[in-house]
Length: 201
Picture (cartoon, rainbow, N blue to C red):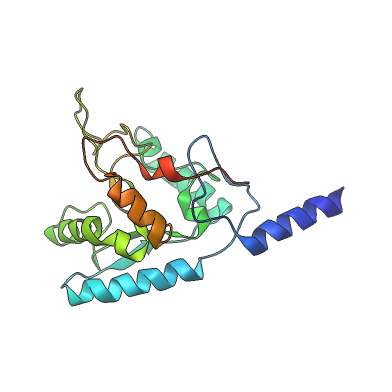
């Protein structure tokens, strides 16, 4: 039986999770799934960085692939530093899209992702208009609601985590275009990228 389990794990590591794999607070990835950074996603990111540069937009990767163990460290650290708010932006190990190897947190070089510096804001606006052309979506887009606090900038509403304009995930050009055309970036539309994903395995 152990041999079957080992072969199962090896097969899934070799094949990798599909680009449309659903990762949420309820739907996670196994602790053994450690694919590393996805080469196709990285190539797409590098192409996007070059194109953005031609538009006067600079992009650097603040955080990329995180395995299960590192995500456990991240949530412990954030829980220690920000015990009242860390669950609004930090995922439990096995429940972070970063474990897929296709997700990147980006910012203007020298700035933190949370910075409201005009250069970051310029970058985030550019991503909204262009990321899908390279196969990326913004996993937790800005959404507005009728009730207080009226949006998800500081507290999660509609999206599982707060609005994270820096958190981009590669899903392939075709799916990114479909999600973009569905209006997921409209603040009043409840459509989310996660609506287009499937559990795995």
